[in-house]
Image (tube, rainbow, N blue to C red; front, side, top):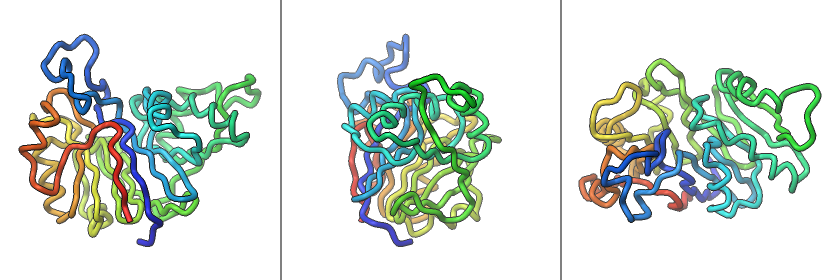
Length: 259
């Protein structure tokens, strides 16, 4: 799959409650290591001409400020859970500075949730200053946002269909505990894979650490990073030491280049 060189920034690598978690006094939540501080999971993808984010978390404003994002061409959504959509209102800053609507790509399930959660954005008469967005359906086949190729990959989050995405040789999947064989074929030959790995103990709707390792190794991916991490997984530095050589935990602010 032809793609321009891409820069990926991990805007957040935490699960729905973030790390530290509110009211928790566990050792991980009290850690002074910056790599144990995790905002909700999202990534920034940049080519020379196009910038997009995958998901607008409740931390979206902070994430945009931390990454010093001045230009955003599009938002693409994985699924409608609140920790992945709650920050949509803050795209209004980009509307103000760029004077055009934000392109938002989502499946029907997520579009319905956005219209319910942010009804004021989609009213016929809009109050001055509310976000201006153009909704776009995500097709099943390869499409482009600017010069960035996007291949949707359907995974399962218990019974909810969630979209992962392949951007050239880079694949991003979050909130999954099952990937069917036909969708695994779309991931094959990726050079870099990002996959959710919530904790070591079994979970109803997320891959465990061992399950995520097994997915990566079954696909023979050269480099894998884990995201959507809970405080239950353990300290960043300790877990990294346990992982195979070509697998590591992502952390907030981490940047990787995919050529």
